[in-house]
Length: 188
Image (cartoon, rainbow, N blue to C red; front, top):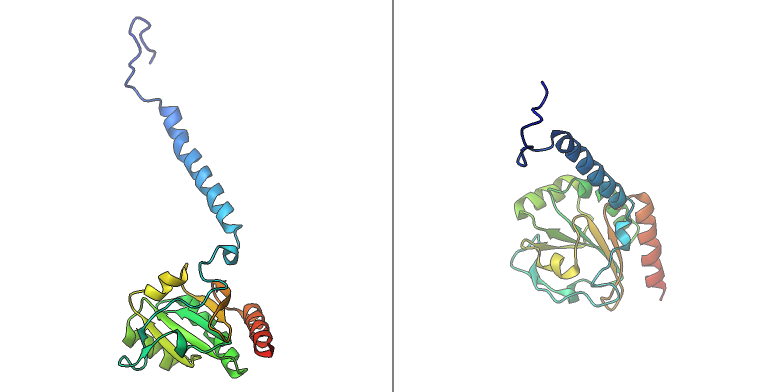
């Protein structure tokens, strides 16, 4: 079928070939942005708490809701791990945190945006690496720490100053680095 040369072109008629290319172009741009994002080391992202004291907080103990905890209850040098029972990577890192605990590292937990009963069941089932666990049901401490998500792990020194942050799961290599940094703080 040929178009009638006497008929003026319809300005409202879409260009079907160009519209067919639009999804391909969009997917290409999104793929490139995803690839760029995968090149970023999350641990280089800025943190509002590095080299500063822990933010002020008063939150209940996970195990004993009537007992309130504050920064003075978390004595360093120590590891502070933000976790949740719904977090699969938290489950995967649990053995490394247990090993750190068994090597004499004080590990504190912050149960983040979780249900208390689920968290307690999870710790009973998996074993608790925590000397103490804070219950941050509303996520306030996480927001104050600039948390990107769970799991996220921090090191505090004797004065309660945040000296290190790790975004993501603690694997064997990360646990070795945490242990090295804790031992260095203990020696000072």
